Image (cartoon, rainbow, N blue to C red; front, top):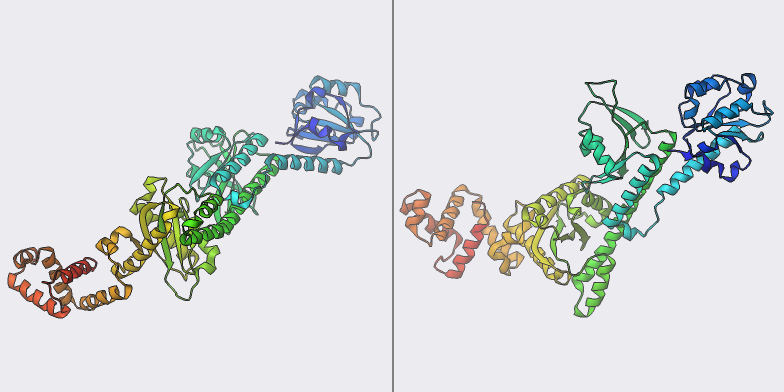
Length: 544
């Protein structure tokens, strides 16, 4: 969309331009400029262009415009500017009558003003108008991390696109898996054309693709109807929003009625730059906000009762309601002790943002290689162990992809707690991490519930390792593995030789011999209740 002719003529630059005829057409839209100085030049008029002439053709052939009006070509133009006192002292009366009759503005322009100056003035005015339409008020970077704020910004830009060009627009945010629309018009056209969101960047139907601007990957897609190859074709403009070489979103403008014009390209580029600016500011806000959130978490883990009011104030500054409930999860980088995960914060933050865990969680480093994730429990379906394991596994793989020298392990405590109880939840996670590594060494994600009775027992890490090492040594021999398996079934059946033999499909004397042998290897007294309980618990966590 360009600019109305009356808006141009209201500018100070055009103060000496005079409307000679066709004042009723001053609301016509100007979308381009054309210089026409041959008698038949008007035959190539496309429409909505403001034509300029020195008057040479009219002076030689005063009736050269007649055919243009008869064929309806001139009526589609925005108007005609004739330079004063160059080739014509006066404009022929019949020419004035034609323009007046068809409400096409006829304007006399000063002799001394160059055509290039007029073209530049119109282009600058169109650009300035587009900038004003798309201008977004600057807000603090901390506000930009708020998703509601982000949504308002994106919708405002998309609505400005449709208002400016009369073409509906759409943006798909990849990390959020969320679509934003300028209005219901875009969705209606999509439904009528049987287009899904992903068809706009990866069409499933036969189509053509044409690059409009290689620098920003601006492309036009056009669908081909095999039943009617020469019939109307749906087309749209696509520009990916890319940050740090990763596509964050797809920006789409639907060419619902006709192709975008020269002026529309200005608007699309400005809208794209505004959208990219929003994503850049959000990325900066998240990075800066992450450090602020980290400081807040460290404060929350070390506060005492007298600091409660201060904690509540700090929480409000970070948009964290004290009344809400959260799940606490911890992560630890374990691949290389020499690696400092916090030093690679930029890649770590990018991996976090690219994974689903960022939808409901915020993370903070607690030291160089350990940190925690505060998980919002508002969406109950997103708090199941299976869902949490899936998003943490995705995050683990994203970190490995971005930081090949890192490997993450996770501990989960699914007790919903408020911020005042966060410290206890973190302590539970630390216990889960420590005991999970010993009891389930083959896993990378452990949940508090997995520990069973061990969650209630305070066992030193060294003692637990010592207890397990004896069993692991025995398990290296297949015969000993069978002995441990026999012991496990024997204890599960209240030390009944007969039932154990039945369950293992062996003779009762074989069971007696195996139990005697394993008692000797472990040097334990199964008659001692405490000793027996300890063995039962350890056997639960061995892969027998």
